[in-house]
Image 1 (spheres, one colour):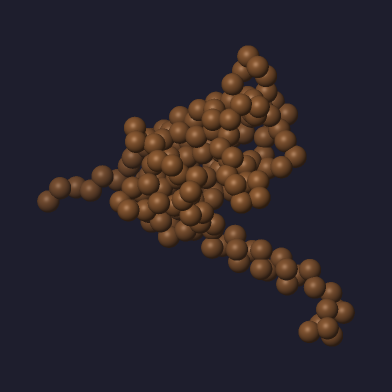
Image 2: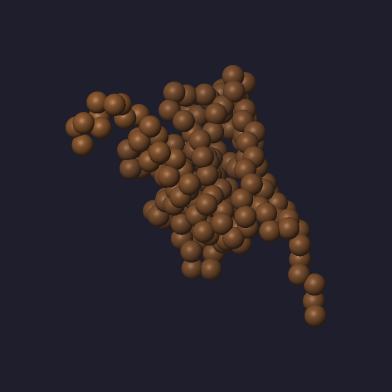
Length: 166
């Protein structure tokens, strides 16, 4: 019986999609996403540089376009430092990336995006496959834990007077 592969690592190089988000004309925004699978865990590392800090946040997303899955997993917000860099790392179970119940083997790309109204503005993106999908129309999956945290925050913000109004 063949031994199951226990470790894999691959990089997705991020390239600038939209102009106007880099620090200067001579420096374009660049970065990478590293996905490491080891012992049932998937470590996701985002690194970007030469990106302009703005008041509205950038978001890290993973694009799933393999094995019949067409989804965007929202990983989280990205805070850019004063030098235009960010280095962020997350760890999830391999079969539950971003607490979305999607397996890591369905990830085909990654992106740094801005959400403006109901539109996705892709600042940077990259893919591990040569076939680049029209991914902006895929359904967005948020972390189930993140949704629970939002609900808890709403309950905490109630005052003693709110109890009488219910």
